[in-house]
Length: 217
Image (cartoon, rainbow, N blue to C red; front, side, top):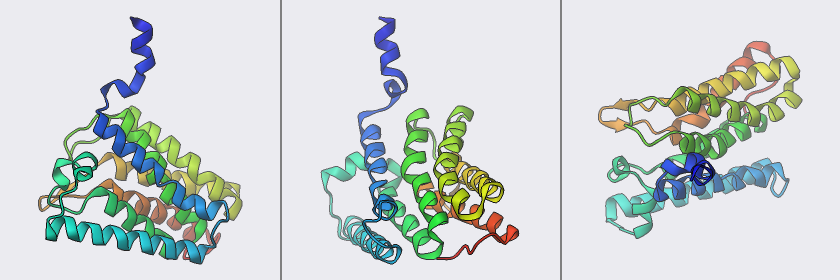
């Protein structure tokens, strides 16, 4: 039936385990929202992220070194992560890094690019080889989401022209990081690690050149 096929839409080609990974990924949006909704101060948010990153590091130590083999790891990790640090840990490490280094109006959208943009991109695209780029429609969606989460933070902080330019630069950098996963010495440079720093550095470069606002937290 055509209607049944159309209702399934993009999700028809997404495996159950991949959908679970994306839902867990998106749930991380709750972390930056702690600060955005003023449940915690910026300094307190930094401490929250340090705790999350430390917990991820401990779990990965037990998984990779001790040999902890929980069934949930089979669901939430990919094949190339079995002997490498898993994406969820890199996710925590990268968000923590940008929160500790950059100003809130740079770090928060950089984190949202990963927690919102990457799951959207993942659902639109199929699981492909680690070193293979994503399709143009997927990259376009990633760019649109990243721009949408960046502009509301950057424009009020630095003004319309510079803010929009910084949002475009950040979205473009995050899209490139999402779309291409190079393999270096047999290790996949996971986009969970690269998206937030790429977005934050690109936005910071525009702000630094314009002299619009401090870029460090």
